Length: 399
Ligand code: PLP
Image 1 (cartoon, rainbow, N blue to C red):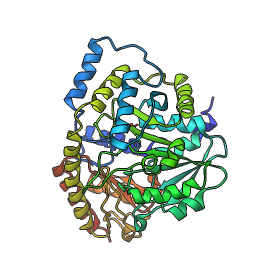
Image 2 (image 1 turned 180 degrees about the horizontal axis):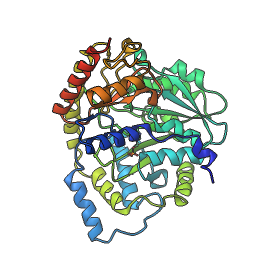
Image 3 (image 1 turned 180 degrees about the vertical axis):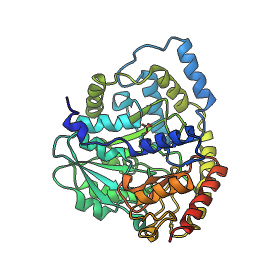
Image 4 (image 1 turned 90 degrees about the vertical axis):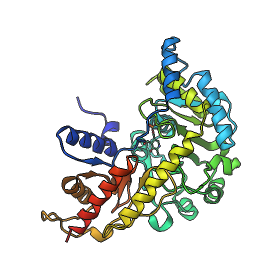
């Protein structure tokens, strides 16, 4: 017995691997600061927890409709109308076991062998692997710091072929924090209007984590002509600090939603009934705390950006949102660590940081754009300051 060919095409999530490594080191007593994880350090709000406890007490502990309870679908319909000016009916809504599962369902339900999916790089690690699992081909388009980590319309135009099925847009982005303005989305939308066979996967998971008054928009909102072929994807994980509850969702064409439901009916069935009840509370409840949390993240972003730019050899752009920075360090490639190791890649630099500075970041290679690293600043100001000081020292010590 061997693993399947489909499995052989993918690799384990590199970001989850770093989190596991940090946990192992901590258990072994090493004073390591983990900046690899992609989750808010805030707790799930109490009113959400209470809703879940009530759901258990009320007996909401059985199977639900495969792709979401009527209550949750109604809450999602209301959310899309309230936050995004998008009008969906419940049969256009799919609820899944986290946003990663939404991606998996949508891609596996639509991508055939040889189909292409345009993935701007750097990208969230799961996009290419889910496409590969489905037998498709990820088509990477480099969108580096010189262009604000954002796909340009002419790049999109050049990447589209008759085999293109989807383009993935993620704003604000994991791993760079870059966010598209309405004008930038409109410019991409004008290209897509000329190619009616291309569908848009709009991953808005970090919608509520934006800074300096940056106004969130999503492509189906700014380009109504693309509404029919856009899957607008969101979830509870990042906004409501509910990563463990596993609720992701999407709004889109009813045939696509039905196709995703068919796949889900033969794999996970419904998302956890209790987590769905919690998600109803999160989406229908008072949203004002989201702004407070974003403000706290903004303070940390400013701290990390200024401290990393003060490290020799590191250049750290200032992101518009999410809770990541994506500094580049080409000036450090070719240097040698105090123990004599050559820094010949971002993987080597990240290994040096973990070994010598006891700071865990994720190498840019995992996200498709090197030499860089992703640093998550979803941790306390004190730990961030300490981590950045350690990185500054590590940078000063290479020759
Ligand atoms: N989309 C992006 C860009 C993400 O960064 C993540 C999580 O890291 C997800 C989707 C999926 O989140 P989850 O599966 O936890 O809901």
